[in-house]
Amino acid sequence: MPNAELTRKSALLSNFHHITDRINSACGRAEAGPAVAELLAVTKYARPEDVKILIEAGAIKIAGESKIQDARSRWVTGELAPLKSRIKLHFIGHLQTNKAKAAVETFDWIDSIDSVKIAAEINRRAAALGRTIPVMIQLKLSSSAAQSGIAPDKAGELLAGIRTFSNLEPRGYMGIAPADASPEQLKTVFKEAKKIFDRDFPVPAGSGPRNYLSLGMSGDYELAVEAGSNLPRIGSALFA
Image (cartoon, rainbow, N blue to C red; front, side, top):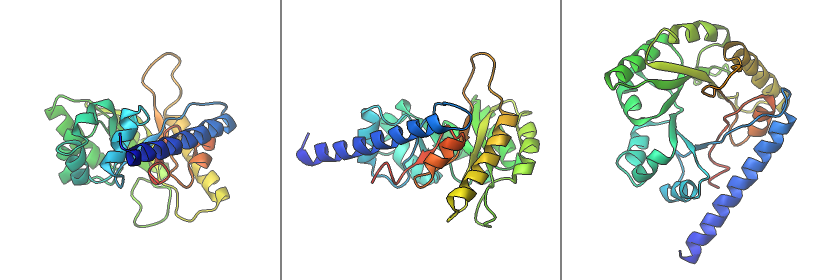
């Protein structure tokens, strides 16, 4: 491997270990007691060669993309296609019904369900492919009109609707914190999301599939994990 590639690999793995160390420390500070959090690597702006390095090193096991066309050009027809089977690919962007078919064909998980309408279309497309697809509901944690998601007080109703679809497997909640929020504001928002998650996805008594509360990004993941997030989404800090 050329020196430049070795240097880049070293930098990426250093970023990964720094982030995971901080996540593990935040787990130990979590109000609910020690927990285990997994890292979702947001790869939408990352260079494919950087993503490849981390997958081949065993660092990336879950990846997220927010634009279907871009994801397909990387993971289906592009240079990351040979590595797709080694990770779980999550859709983390706003999904329109006319893109549901492509989303179900491309992604292993869809993390941004915000209506019964889109859930029904994903269910229909998944059934046509003989798939049962894990999904998460996106909570609207900001007053911004640009922010997608469902109001937290309507989340339980949407979850009940999703549970009627035979080809969807609800597995938790995802949320994006308000931009420019203070640490105290973030703590409040994350804590409220955790209450909803605990209410609707109680820890099973026995073994079973893991459910996720996906909160936190590169700038606030430690506060999110302290509040109970077990799937922070990190891109810029990882691929810096």
